[in-house]
Image (cartoon, rainbow, N blue to C red; front, side, top):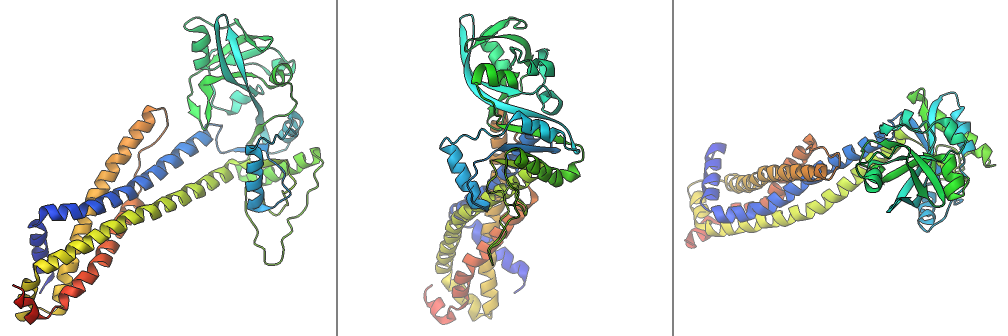
Length: 440
């Protein structure tokens, strides 16, 4: 029997049992929709994270941040260092001198350094506990912070430890409402600060709500409020981004010299693989109390993490598809039981093993492909609603279903249609025609 007659028989059978077929398809729809949602969410998260990394100034930057020196190498060092920092270990060795020395490197054209604290800011009867964001005056040259009213502080004001601040938009509304805050004084601890500017509304970037921050000269914040000498991290802008790795290594050597850390080649035991972590090439970084990262490295790592999470979620989704596939197998057994006499009659008049098997495989594939198409449409619709919800809450979440989501969905449908349909189809094809006819 040819393909088209078999297809017509299969479609007639499926159409004759709409409710049962619909319930069977539902399991496939849920699984395939989950596949589409996972891929779309992965694209949305990647776009969100990459966009927020670029909001720090773009990809032509290197970042230096504090790190807990563990004496370990590779991923073990990263894990132990992260645990130590989470338990409250403070690294106070990164300083403005490190920032200024790295700024002198030939491939560095600009930069800024940061210290963050938390204090109560008061004006008249209003007060609010906020993040204090101490930076150098060059922040606006690199970062995407913009001034809505007034001005930002100057390098001279920073170096003279002037008591001036710039308010985030939410802080301005909280303390001053609709009135103009410029040249008014607010109190932070025992020091009065003159408001010289208000930043434009920016929203949240990573974990920072910039609208809920107060910007201050870094030296003023260090000495007059926090009583410290160190910084938390610093960003440097590259003249030639193609030399990012070489410049990052120069920065490491500069800071190691400042911190009296001896640079040693990475020594590996026989048969030990070279572990690749942030900021580690062939130099031993186990004693470093800092980490230098290029933006390209950060994006590569985030891409790897996002890809790993996507694969993990797909593995979980596969379980729901297996459940749907078991449903397909069960319904095929029911169909074969109901049509045993029909199978016997067809074999009695000359239908071959391959004709019967092919017919039921086609039915199984049709069921899973219907589920795949419905699942793709449902998944795309849900993904679009997720993007709308994320954008409503201020996240730059783009709606995109990558082509591989369609390929994987259809591949799952074919694999599960064949995989869970082949055994019932073989059973049908092996029926003895005489025994099958007796069941009529």
